[in-house]
Amino acid sequence: MNISHSNDRRALRLALAVTLAATAAAPLTAKAQDSTSGFLNAQDTMSCVCWEDALVQTDADLNGPEIGMLRDEYNRVDELLRTAHANLDTTDQAEVDSVARISERHTMLKQQLDQAEFPLLRRKALLATEFNRVCAGKKMLVMNVDAAHANPQCPAIP
Image 1 (cartoon, one colour):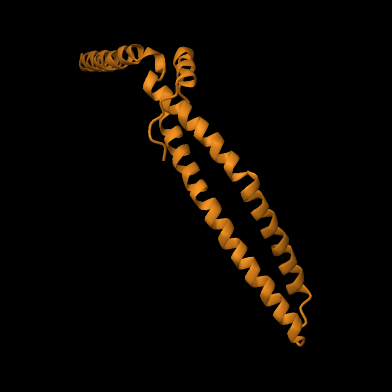
Image 2 (cartoon, helix red, strand yellow):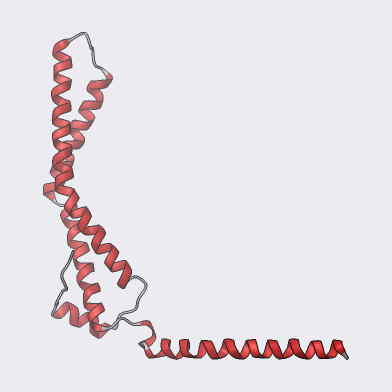
């Protein structure tokens, strides 16, 4: 009789656990359905469209002709410096002075490149962080995306 009574209690506990789990999940299911199945609202969609456009522009600036020419010059001098170091005759003072000048030019170009790229890279990181936080993996209604493209009212962009 104790065995039967023990099994009844286990069955009752199991039934209560299933009921509690179903009851707890019901508000979550209702809430998910109320949020239009995971679609972003119009304001968040506007932000996402703006951030995406700003990311594209920032990438274009990073790969644009101004920074590109500076990067090309830096790479040319970097290769020249590597070759000069590899073949340096330390007993020839004129050659040592020449390598020192190349090294100074290399350092100056690196600083210029860093100064040109850093604000853009920082901006890109901030934009990507916001985009990923709000937009990544989310659905957007076509009408909200079209409205954002037609009349962009972008929030302050980092």
